[in-house]
Image (cartoon, rainbow, N blue to C red; front, side):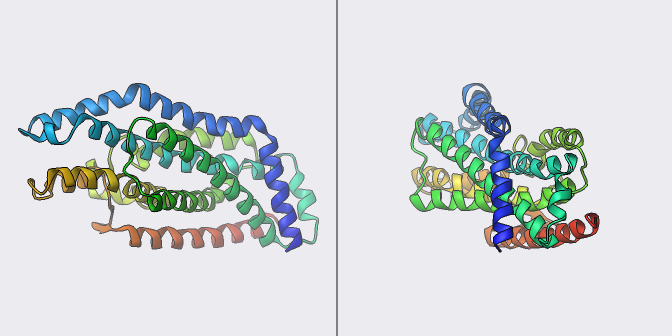
Amino acid sequence: MRSFTGLTKRNLLVFFKDRQSVFFSLLTSIIVLALYLLFLKGTFVDAMNGVTEKYPGLSTIVTATDINMFANLVLFTGIIGSTMITVPYNCLTTLVNDRERKIDYDILSTPIKRWQIILSYFTAAALSSIILTGVILSFGLFMINLQGDLHLEVLDIVRAYGVVTLGSVSATAFFMIPVLFFKTTSASGAFFGILSAAAGFVIGAYIPLSQFSGSVQTVCNLFPASHITIMIRNVFMNGILGHIDGKLAGVDGGMFVTTIKELFSFKACFFDRELGMASMLVYVLAFLVICLAVETVIFAKTYKK
């Protein structure tokens, strides 16, 4: 295992030595977060206020502070979900760079087994992603906490970091499969552009998946990132929804919170079945194991030099 540990450490150092890559990995998500909080959030808040004004007395119970915090958490969930797609992919660039510069020839000439080589790339990318997404999560929670009570318990915050860790690992395993076929950084960068544009729609960051047909939701929920985003949404928003439901004191029979959860997809619609937190966790873990097995086979067959 000494060879595996050493190669993993080398991959980590190579990635973090490229300060520009690390900087822009963080900068993109931070800029999007700032834009949401400073500009785009207003549109979302206005829409929520319009809903409460339709029901007499509801606007006096569900205050502007509650709506503001709800909007913050909805938007932040989408940002974290998108981050757990773009950052893990960016962390895999070390593999493409090594292949383009023929460094992989030197690595393959060593007595290290093929599965150890691919696992070292995966481990390094996953650890890098966990660190960077953890930084973004911490920054976002700090920024939103300045604007009011998050209604999150300590256990909820721990769960959030746990889900982000799982999301980083699963996304790294998934994206390593296409990355193995890229021979140049330009090809990898082109795919990243497409991925960045499509990511927000697939996970429901821009439009809730509940607004699409059942077949479209099924296709989107084939990807583990969609499940991870829904899990994050449950962790972040159950607190504020519980707070609002407590203020309503049952006058609506729980319909307000139920409607909100249906609208913003708190469960994954998968082949016309709704998956809860436990089922989504099992799906993501199973997907992770399958991806690791597939990429190990691909690497062994592709690199026979």
